[in-house]
Image (cartoon, rainbow, N blue to C red; front, side, top):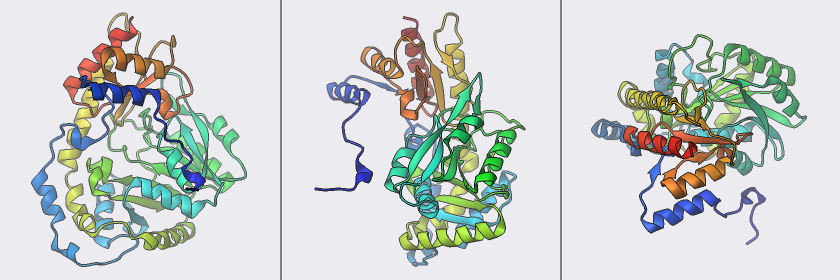
Length: 391
């Protein structure tokens, strides 16, 4: 079959995946520190309340609303208001996921072979999402000197005549670094100069480890340039299976209104957001004090535990500074690559971690672990990792 070049990624497994599959087939017990599914992490969920929310009889009626049902958009606006960020629900457009939100935005902003700038390191799914829309990605650097920061000079060098958008994750995945107010000012200045919109992935913004007045929690209040802020139930209340995301459109009123109108046309073509989850949105977002808080407590406590475990005398492992999110980044001696470290830990310690190159770390040797991991598994896994790094 002669297929689309957008799918020319190859199907060969990487070396780590092959080793993992072999160990699984042998029945060997593996400590998995890569868990990203909150519903499999031992987080308590009020199953009856979720089921009741989805049983709303209004979902029987088909009410196509490309922008999203007004009551669902109001529930999301109430969520932002509860965080101290009032928004107009008319500035929201619902999607089935954040991934779909990216697809809509690439359709809105770019023609085939146009470009978007993305931070490195960051979310590995960007490459696939962009390729499926025939958009090219150009990286700009997040640098580290004890804390992560935006390399504005590198971002400027990445600009080209085909650049159509600046993407950022706030906080970044996996580094856990939040955008700072001075960095936002820099991004707005660059975006204004080059007539570029900002796309801010804010799915982890509820999961800060501690407050910081220098931090930007969300870009929903940005009106200087066209700005798209993305989030959804997947992370806010740990419900990825219910498929509800959203785009908040900020910016100068005329530009924002035009963008929303075109997004609504795109959404009307697919009508992908299911009625039950829209009718349930308010009750599901009301789970933040229970499910969301349980996840926040888990990742915060696990981050502290990892920090304590690698701080032991003689440890060869460094925990890179993070401010939030669901992941921790560890730096190991550069005597081997991060892939070699990951394979060695899997082979010798039956420990599964993610090598830094999965997230486009520019330097060796980094490993990424999930802070969603049940605490007893994480503690044992980090102990094995520290011991292996010590030789």
